[in-house]
Length: 226
Image (cartoon, rainbow, N blue to C red; front, top):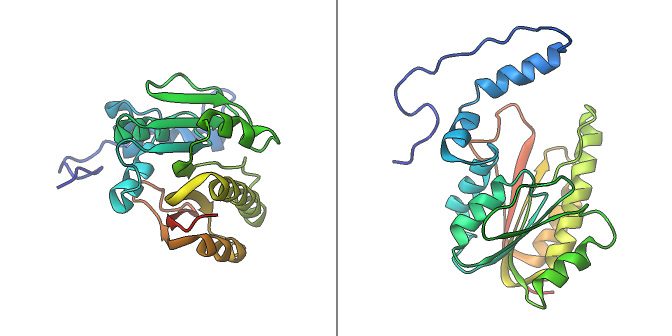
């Protein structure tokens, strides 16, 4: 049986964090959540840079999209958790990641510090592909939250659309696409477009995704070709 947080039978100690100095109550709440998050603890133990690594692990365990020798593009790669998981699973494959934030090197990965939404970003990645097509395009991109649910939903939907456009232009036939999005009701047209280009499209919420989050993932399999 696969080990998951809380499955050891030992009661996890809760860490209380007091508001101190100039720290805002919201910052205190975030810190407390981080200190008491079992996936944050697991990430430290397992050597992953962030808890989101387990989201990709769950996605791949269910849909088997990361195969040895695959060519994978990781959009919104920082701090590198998804890239770490990918390089472990594609064994001898190619991983190209891009993010606006700087990332520490990862063995077996080519990482670019660049804004994927910049006009020249797709050409940069395509040049690195060297004429090859990708087997998988991953997107864990997220826009900075403003706190207004519908606005945040529309912003991340725009990122999903750009990631999908890149996938359509750079995936080989039969390839896979996985992207993060937020529930919000405005994704109907995006779903129609994805279903036009892929044989199977699934919604998936990993156990490692926080229960109070509107975050979910779309996993598209069997790219039909451009």
